[in-house]
Image 1 (cartoon, chains in turn brown, blue):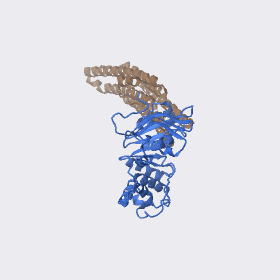
Image 2 (cartoon, chains in turn cyan, blue):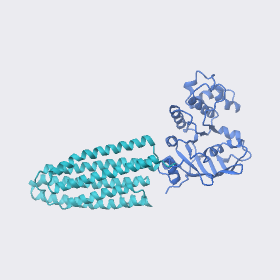
Image 3 (spheres, one colour):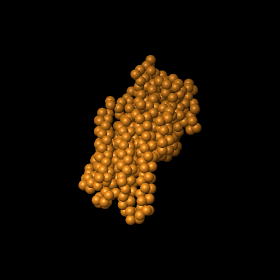
Image 4 (cartoon, rainbow over the protein chains, first blue to last red):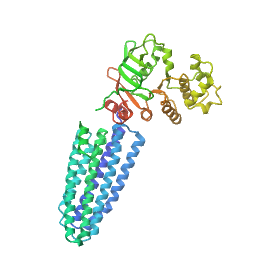
Length: 230
Length: 264
C-alpha cells in the first residue's frame, strides 16, 4: 500500500521549492545587473517582484502545514516536510537580499559606483551557484550525494567570504584616502554584505538537505558533515 | 550506524525474551525474538496485521497457555526467572503481569466487585475498600464512579469500562500491564484519557502496548518494537529502538516503509 497521495504531494512541494529557487536566482541576477549597468527601472522591477517571492513562500508553508495536518507524516516524510519549510523560508530571505541590493542601487541614483564592479559580480555568481546546488542537495534522495554537495558548498562559502573581505578592504582603503567617498563606499559594502548572506544561507539549506536525507542536524562545519557519511 | 535492536546493559530489566519462537501446532508464527524491557517504561509493539504482535504480547504473561496448540520455545525472563519453567504457576505470573484487551471486558458484576475480584482471589479480605478506591484513582476513574460503585460495570461508557479494566488489572499491584490495542474501540476523548493514564501509570508500572495507531505509538511510547512478516509468513522482530529512532529515523528500511504508511 504505497502512500501515493503523500508521495505525489511531497514531490509537488519539492517542485515548488525548485521554482521558488528559480525566482530568487532571477531576482539576484537582475539586482546585480541593474546595479552594474545603472538600470534603475530594473531595480524597481526586482523590488516589485519580491512580493511574488513572499507570496509563493507563504503558499509553500501553508501547503506543508496542510500535509502535516492531513497525513500526520513520520520518519523521512516528516523530515522532508520540515526541511522544505525551513528551506522555503531561507529562499524567501534570499529574495529580501536581492530586494536590498535593488534599493541600494536606487539610492545610488545615476551616480557611478565608487569603484569598478569586479569582485561583487564574482561573489554573486558564486552565491547563486551555491544556492542552486543547495537545492540540488535537497532534491537528491541519496545521502552521499547530498553530503558531497553540501561539502562543496561549504568550501565555496570560504571563497565568498574571502572575496567579501577583499571588497571590504578595497572600499575602506578608498574611503580612507578621501572621506567624501564614505557614502558611496557604504552602498557597495551593503551590496557585498547582502551577497555574502545569500551564500551563507545556501550553506544552511545544504545542511538542512543533509538532515532530510539522514535525520542528522549538522553544525556548519565540514568535519561534522563528513562524519555523517561514515 | 545505530543498532536495529536496542539492548539495555546496565538497566533494571523487568522482562527479557531470549530467542523466543512461537508455534501454533506445526505452524511457526513468530521466530527468534530477543528483546529487553526496562522497568517503568512504555514499549509499543507495532507492525502490520498478522505479524505476531498480539502473539508475543500474550507470551509475556503465558496467556498462550490457554490455546492448546500454542507452543513457546526460548526463554522469557521476568525478573531473571524463566516464566515458562515447570515450577512457575501461570496464575502468579498473570497477577504480576496484567493484561487489558482491545474491547473493554468488565465482568457482569458491580464496579466494586470488578476491581475487588483479583485481590479477593489473592485472599485479601480486609482493606478491600481502600484497594478498590486506590485502584480506581490510579485508573483515573474514581471521581466518575465513586457514587455508583454498586452499579454494573457494564452500565458505564466504553471509555470508562476500559479504565475499569485497567483498575481491575492494577488492583493486584502488577509490575507490568500488557495492553492489546486498548483504545482502538474508543472515541478520541476516551482515547486521550487512556493515553494520559498510560503515561501516568508508567511512573510505577511497565506498559507493553500493541497498537495499530502509529500516532498513538509516537505519542506515548519510550521504545517501539517493529514486527514484520517475512515471505515465509513467519513474524520477526525487525527493529526495536527509542521513539526517536523508530518514528524519526528508522534503521531498517522496512520500518521506514511501515511507519510512513507505505506498507501495512
